[in-house]
Every structure is written in structure tokens, then in C-alpha cells.
Image 1 (cartoon, rainbow, N blue to C red):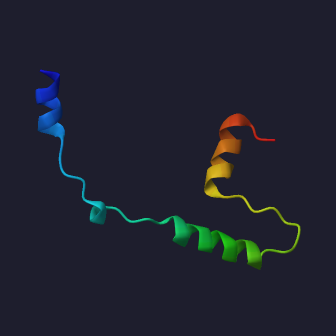
Image 2: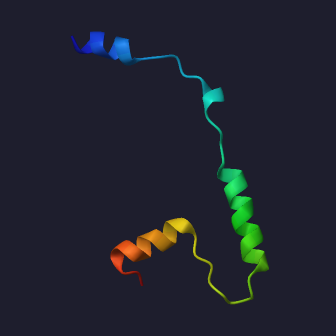
Length: 57
């Protein structure tokens, strides 16, 4: 029964459905960091939301 369900829900993987945005996001962050005054900390969206939830350090 389990194999039947798996077979019904399984489809061929098509990598063209996905876009790798890592490089683009990294370049945006590097450019933003380069444009900030020296010594100023830059918070990414990921770090910022984490600080809000935990109180941050």
C-alpha cells in the first residue's frame, strides 16, 4: 500500500523548474556591504528576523 501511494505521488525531477538565486543574492549583499560606511554592521534578512524572535545578542 505504501509503495502504491509513493508511486502515485512521485514525478520525474525537472531541474529547469528551479532557479538558483544564491549567487545573485550573494552579489547583492556584497555590493550593499561595500557601499556601507566602514565599521557599520550589515544585517541580512535572515539574521534580523532571528534577532527579533530570540531577542538577539
